[in-house]
Image (cartoon, rainbow, N blue to C red; front, top):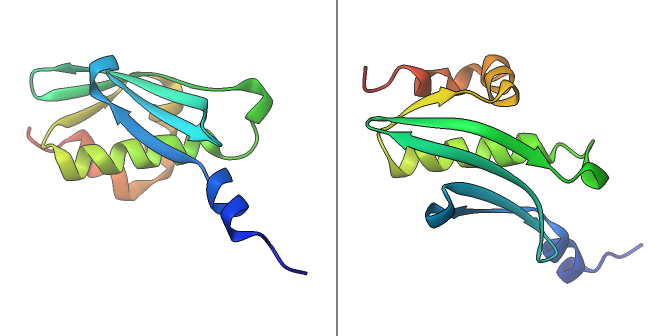
Length: 106
């Protein structure tokens, strides 16, 4: 069986930072499938809300979105992450390698 690599690549989720909207957007096939809203307050970035299209739930998309957003914060800033959204709180609790983001800069 062969797979069409172009189709596979285009259907892979991508996360884009949209600073003008204070949001990370997860897109699949050119359509928004989810987003993570945040607010910057001084030296902190507060992740306030994560949402995934109900039709696409159960595909680990929220996890992909949060992971890539936190990776971007780690690389691009020195801000301390403050998880306000319950999903982000539990995600960071389950991923010890991201817990340093909660205390850096303090």
